[in-house]
Length: 553
Image 1 (cartoon, rainbow, N blue to C red):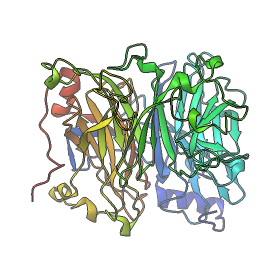
Image 2: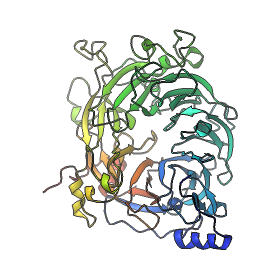
Image 3: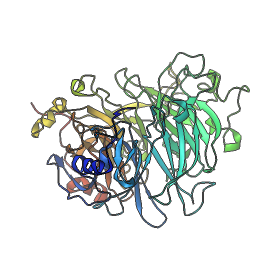
Image 4: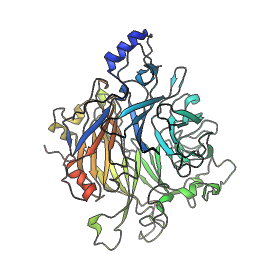
């Protein structure tokens, strides 16, 4: 295990926690501002015990409380002497692995940490639970009304602790595990349909035949939270199946089945929004974005049309079951080799004002795509290709029919295309005392985008986590010309890795509060828009482009 050191006595432990971390469960922290912000302010903060954090997700409980769940990476940016992991003041300073932190954010100005669910540990093997998805028991078939459930991953090279778990988190201070599916390879950024219980989960089975790409897409029915899930199939890019040669990993998929507009027609395709899944492959290079027909992915017992070609098709599909006539693949977009697919967030039914006078294509379906910057540490500052976020037009899903195309192209899956790029010039940091983003600690570049269909800015603004560039807000109402309208760049604190702060992931709740978490231990900030950026959502007004994507020299 990392950071193996001898145990301290009880009194020394308490002193170490107090002196080194200064932690107290649920204490209100005076909110200061970083000084590097525009049209955004920080309204709340909690340190997350200095643990490196990945995905924040928010849910409103049946009693009206708003609860935040954050998944965490393994390791400790600043190890505490005498501890293998980090002390957890929510559990008598117990030495506990990182995992899933539960925070009550009902009052965003006073977030209160309630519990830590450590990721599994097996001997010297340590799991990390980066992802958190939640469902209300009243929405989930097989759930109990009044209860709330958490689905999370555990990623480890040790199959005994590599898989997915469901927890009953109704009592936020005393979560209870209800079921799990371990023995899976390469788990990560899972999606859970609350109305059906179906999950689309990065990973693959560990029993032969093994997929060439270990981080493919597992499809499970997990509506029964009290028992292990029912395996449906494994899906992936052609060549990733057993015997293949392709190793482009699935980072995550987003299903639109529970979208508020699920029953509405897509902009051009003869299908509905709720029958689409958008999957991002490749993470930071060799990216592919795939459009998946949900019905063709699922068998008839789940409302689908897939009929396995062989008895082994669930885990050993024919290539024709991955792509080709009748397959789930509707269309795809292959990215430049230096750009990857980290997140693929769909935005449906956009009506850009500038298109109003045209006689077709006035309505657009767009996917916000991010490509992760991956260079780490002091030697990793911009020591790679620049990474960006994109507005990807998926209005035309492929060229297999006319209209909307004028002919069938040489590649019948050709259709999606990039409309706009959301980039931040690292030189724009020179306007502030911390200087050029490439010369600050840690990574600079894009990581992730928010993923809540019900946030009040949906279809108008998008939030992009930009590592040491902080959080950047873009006006996407004209998706071919996105404009940066707000940003907030957090600061390191006493718990942050010496390489510096690193804004990792972002989410926006139904109230419009923006949650950003730090990969290097600087905790969680709750932000809100102000100035003209807030008026975009509230009154549909405009806001000047901040120009940080084209810094003057």
